[in-house]
Image 1 (cartoon, rainbow, N blue to C red):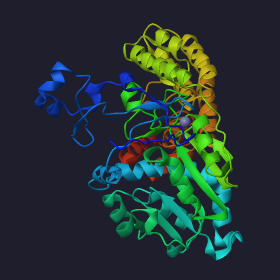
Image 2 (cartoon, rainbow, N blue to C red):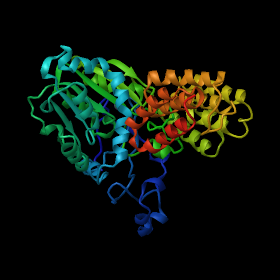
Image 3 (tube, protein in one colour):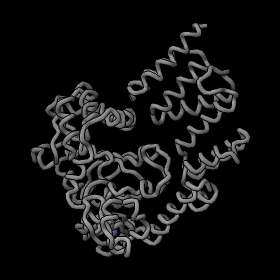
Image 4 (cartoon, rainbow, N blue to C red):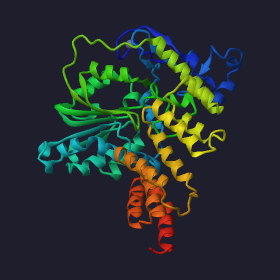
Length: 463
Ligand SMILES: [Zn+2]
């Protein structure tokens, strides 16, 4: 294991190992462990690293910088090969996963996209875009079409050869393995680094490298997961595993502070940010690299304390001890949602809603909790799932909540729920179908479900 000797934020070499917080069973290949009798006699000393099957001491190397509180891991060997091996070919879900984020990108970057479009008299016909870690290129293809850019002005990099080849052959994009293969004289107006920086070694060196490819007035667009602040899976899945949350693939675990430290250290400033969906997203512009960078220091003991509380909260959560979970860690949206659904609390609408309102206070306007407040409004008005219902005041409230959510974060699920309200409660089939078309555009796999709903609408007649 190659040790990242210096902290990427503060350059200190003083680390505190946190492997004792991790569950070895989870990370090591069981077959290999059984082969290794020594593991059984002395499990703390001798482990097999699932990432390459080699036996070594302290295999994860999860650690915190004692000087600034930055969380990272020992870097695995051959990280590029590992990313390459993760995908054998591109599946529909890979495309849907990217599709889901496109409306979010559009919302966040609308002005930038307008500026990059030649027709908008923005940056003329020379706008250039680079998407680092572009997967199969779905987002890059979107930018190219959206901004009406020439193919020769759009570039992607990707370690996975399957994704790279797909993007080249299906979308016709220029995708190379690494930015070092892009002509050194290229300068980009927009470099996207979307959910990538948590995967790369030496993120500070990486951003300084990227900087060389950015025009002086160009934009750097980045997003990271931020579990250090909130117990929530970026994918929207239920947060029921500490090990999954702190997945080994994310070799850098940023807090808001450490991420902002990194950005400042590398000579960028944040001009726009959002932290409600798909992690923490920022748009940056280039400024001078600080001569003497002084990071905001976080007390590493506080970071450890917080990690321990998170672990304990998830442990309580899986045992359905929601109050105990929330006592140790308040910013845990799934715990409020599951607590409200739990049979001890689902006796009345008021009881459920009160729990969710409390959750909103402690989880800074969590989208998930807001969506659940809409869901219970539909459920409690005697409306059976799948059936047509009456457009009551509560359904109206649900509609308000969902419309606000959709306005902030255009998502497949909000479109679908609003289609249900329009079609099954308000009987406005035309509007319902417009929403369903959005669902299908984002996720073509839902076409059957959506068409069945259209079938239900029109089989009842139009009055
Ligand atoms: Zn540090």
